[in-house]
Image (cartoon, rainbow, N blue to C red; front, side):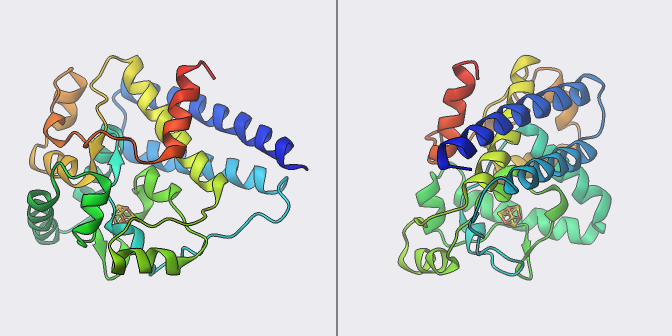
Length: 252
Ligand code: SF4
């Protein structure tokens, strides 16, 4: 399949993922169902979509990312309320109370340092995500979709970026990037459609709120802007995300 042909296939796949993700999320919000199974389901579908297109792409590049490589976990992660509430539910159900209390302390310390920073400033802090434990993501099963999306073909680029203090800038694998951001865009579209507050949130600050305020979901679903203090510093630094937002706005 030539480059134009597979890009058209990818475009159709992304459109389908956005629609599916929007529909599934809206149903869960409407029926007050749990967010953990929703995130798992959406991530499985995203993977299935990714595999389906892989067969059509000759010589798809392989990202260098692997367990124990965590250079990207120093960046700012922008999330939807659904993703952050799923992580909070997961932590409450899986972690022992003393572990959770220690995590909340680490999150509070990091939040003070990182609140309101843009992506570059956040990276320059050289402080890893509070959810990183022993070099691994401690909430891997429900990690945010940008964490699933971001990848790099050369891990050295990420390592060097952290040492030199510049954002990683190198080739990445396009399909993984697009399908995961598409899933997040679908979640966001469902939130908008139900007229709930869909301000993009910074992960650390939003998770602090979700963990400190057990009624956060209820209040947010009643239309309260409970996560507003965690609003992400709003310049869209990821061009893939910005392009897809444009496509959605154009009625894709
Ligand atoms: S949530 Fe997990 S994958 Fe994402 S930045 Fe934090 S530790 Fe890394």
